[in-house]
Length: 217
Image 1 (cartoon, helix red, strand yellow):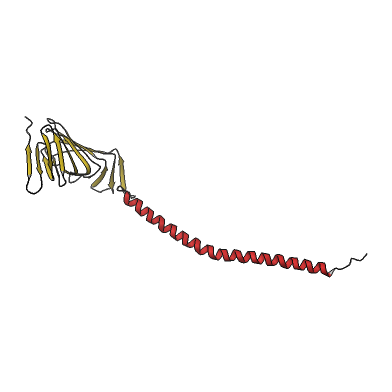
Image 2 (tube, one colour):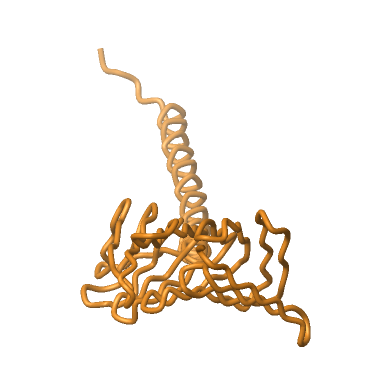
């Protein structure tokens, strides 16, 4: 038997093929339109993310006082020993110290403590939030909630700044100071404590000044 050719079936098949091609073309067109919109948006989002990350890093680094570089030398629980011109010994310690460079003379100290002691006297103790130790100049600057205790006068002083000259055992500051001890209460705007706490000069407002001299005897 000879198969009968059906023109209607061929037309229907051709229509189906054309319909599938048209659907595929529409899907491809929608995909191309989406990519044309997505790629610029993705580029913009990437640039915004990079700029945001740079800004966040800058903000975080600004909060880090002890920001380091490759040349920084970090020390945990550091201890520095030395001696004043009059033979008194001092120890500077802290939670962390950073020397910014191999040959840098200045060392930053986090949560510093200092002990200054002589053979015949009670040691003087000082602590604060942050400090800077200059080894060649033998100076030590402490800032933030500074507490100074001991020495022969048994006074406890509180201030926001203490600049220690380790050559002469002198502590001074230009910030308000308040002291408590067995002889009473002292308050002033600036101060100088010398001779390992034996001589105290506290300056008040204007020309007002308090001078205290304590003899070990």
